Length: 260
Image (cartoon, rainbow, N blue to C red; front, side):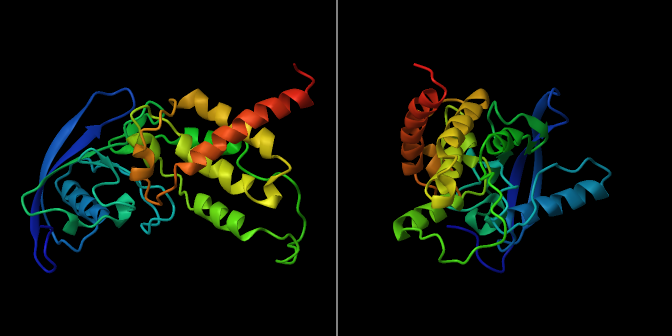
């Protein structure tokens, strides 16, 4: 049974500490009394205040909006990306999901494509590299057009909206046994490729983003852990759509360049 409102629960934290990318790391044990109504990151904030007061180095972790929107936060909690609550980013996880006396293991996202910067903070810039390779519409669209000027089928609009919900946190990579980034990449490819405005660069975009992804991350073997860990529950269907478009893109792009 989870913690009760208004009470204080006592938990034992095993937190990964690592001074830098090439430094050895190990777990550090702390005991923390906290309200079940506090968020997981508020609990880490409180622990850092105590470490500062004791003249010790605070734990490095990432966060920004703390509303499950920006994708900045993300740690492994008891071996699960973002923790035990489904469809929840770390910043939205509350201590009521844990019991009094629980031991909680807190680690950084574990993936070769996400090297540790310090403690719980990892370098997720490879995701940025995927976006930079084609995750945009480069045409100069000029002034905003009337909302009804370009008709968008309802089904395409709904599916594109679902894909655009991806916040780029990297939980899919951390949860995947192969450290694959297909769910992230397919969401970014999909939300542009489904809309009329994204058609002009659809094939070059797909090829560039997939091949950039493959430089940093492993291959997808359909374990499905990615969508289970995703705080926005992005569907595996987008991976299938991306794979289909990638095969089409290779044929179309070769034809455009005169290759046979």
